[in-house]
Each structure stands twice: as structure tokens, then as C-alpha cells.
Length: 414
Ligand code: HAM
Image (tube, rainbow, N blue to C red; front, side, top):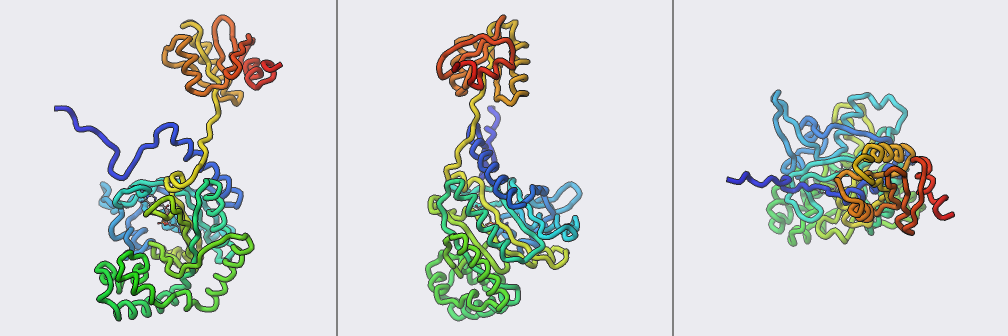
């Protein structure tokens, strides 16, 4: 019997050449943008204690209730493949006493995340996020800076998007609002979807996310949290908005914006792209002033965002960057090692170089150089010759150094 065909697990994917180049290019743009604003590279483990997400993301969220890849390790500990990066960043902040560093601590990350969702276009079980977090200051300029950085990243990636913005206030305001909203939902309980009805107590805010018709009608008449912000939160939000206005960024003020994670306070935002269809969220985030404390650290404000790499690539036009190589061809079998050494020398001089490694004839090598879009072919035989692939011109050179000079353009065009 033939063995069963092996396939990548449901909801995961392989990145085949040359598709990875667009991701590389996106990463370079993100590192550049965030790096220049002081966000330093940060990495944390892909596995974390399950408890981190229960406490961090919230037990009433879809992520914790339904979407985590959780398993027991050989020591009987419950571990989870991280579904998001903010909880891990805050855990690391507490664990390493980063509150003793100059604040804010600004972090940027890129890596795989896991959610057990029903796969569809733009929604995977393993996906990559680019993220940024600023911990240790509640300065509204951080909220504005982060929103502008994500906007710039999307713009530089060719993603057309709409920015939705709101404020959720502080925990007290939210609790009071939660009561108001629960009362409203109970008044009109019979019109709600079953799922929303089941969550009135645990998480009434999520009713804003429902696409159930009856629920939507009830939510259209619901009280708005944004009308009940206390003075400090309202001022904070006004300052964030003023800075966005100064930067001439347009946004929709949307009091129905609720993000699918429980840790948010004050500013929340989401960038949406219509070209993504149902999975319209390309990136989003907000402030989470109570999270570090909830994870056992000192009271510490924080704000950040994450964006989906696959969704940016899908919705955008990130160019795939690729340097045309020099191709080192082998004239006869006995020149194999010299050609190999010369390719290495070229790379040492900063030139992208590939050497023949599949036993092709000279004709086959020339054809392959064409396929690789090589700028020039260096033919290593008893002599070394350089052939310019655009003009077809061919000259003899003494060594790798001279070959590089020729490839760089000088000798050949002269
Ligand atoms: P999130 O909105 O859950 O936020 O995810 C951020 C982004 O990750 C989404 O906008 C989307 O582009 C991408 N994403 C999420 N789930 C999937 C999936 N199943 N397949 C493909 N892409 C996906 C967070 O994760 C928060 N940690 C963001 C944050 C950082 N808030 C504050 N700091």
C-alpha cells in the first residue's frame, strides 16, 4: 500500500520561492520604519504557559475560549502556541524588570502566531504578525506615533485602508458602561442572537461585532461608551486625535469598534482593507494600561499594534526585491573548483554570485544564467572571461577583482 500523502496541516501554508522575497521586502520596510522611531528588535518564545493568555487576553474572548493550540508537555505543564504577542511582551517586561530601564521601552517583533480558526482567504491557523509595543508611558504621543507608523507601513506596502478609531476609557468607565449595556441587551433580549444572549454577562461589548440582523438593530440603539468617558480619558483621546489631525491622517471615529481581546483601555484602532473581503482587518491595536499589572508587574501603561503579514502581502503591492546575480559558469570539469572559489570571492566583494552546480553543458549554463536573470556570466576556463548578458559583449579578465570591475560596468562599456 502506498504511504499516505504528507501535506502541510490544515490552515498552514508553505512559502515557495520566489514568494518569500515580498515578505523579506516587507520586513525590511517594517524594520526600517520602526527602527528609526526607536522600536528595538524583540523576540519571545512561541510557546508560553497557557495561563499567560487566560490572564492576559481574557477568558471570555474567542481566542482563549476556542482558538488556542494548547497541549501538555512531558512534565505535565499546560503550554500554548502563542495566539498573539502583547501578552508575551508584557510577561517579558515583568520577568526582566524592564520597568527599571528608561521608559518607554519600545519593542518591535515579527514572527509566527497560531489560532485554531476556520481557514479561509486571509485567515490561517499559522500566520505571521509584525508588531510594535511601547511600555511604561501613557503619553498620548505614543498612541499617535504607533498609529502613524502602522499607517506609513501600510502605505509603503501599497495597502489601501481605512482607519477606525475609538476610545474605551478606563476599567471603571468600562465596568459602568458594561452594566448600562447589559441592561439595554436584557431589555431587548428576544431580538438577540443566541451567541450574544449567552455572553450578556461575560462580555456584552462583543455584541457590537455580531452580524446577526436582530442584534445589529439592538446595537444601533445601544448607549455609546465614548459618550461616557471620564475627563482624563476624554482629554487623552482628544490629544491623540489632535496629533493625528496635525499629521493630516483621516480616520473614522467609530464607537462600535471593539477589538477581540480583553486588555484594551483608552485608544483602540484598526486598519481595514476592502480588498481583503470578509477578513478585512489588516492591523490593529490600542492601549492596554492594566495588562502588565494583571500579569504581576507594577502598574504600567502600554500601547501597541500588530498587523498580519499575509494580509498586507495580499492587499498590497510590496515589490519583491531581488539583486540580479553574476553567474559563474564552468568551462570544463577541471575548472570546477576554481569556479567555486571565484564565486565565493565575488560574494566576498559584495557581489551576488551563483556558480553552476548541476552539471549543465555550456549551452545549458547560459540558458540557466538567463533564467536567473544574471547581469553577467563569468566563464572560468584556462582563462576567465566575462560576458555581459545585456550586450552579449565578452572580455578576458585576470582574476575575480577584474571581473568585478567589469561587471560594475566600467571596463565593458568603455
Ligand atoms: P489582532 O487584531 O488579534 O491583534 O491581530 C492583529 C492582526 O493579525 C490582524 O489585524 C490580522 O491582520 C492578523 N491576524 C489575526 N488573526 C489572523 C489569522 N487567523 N490569519 C491571518 N492573519 C491574522 C493582536 O493580535 C494584538 N496583539 C495587537 C496588539 C498589539 N494590541 C496591542 N498591541
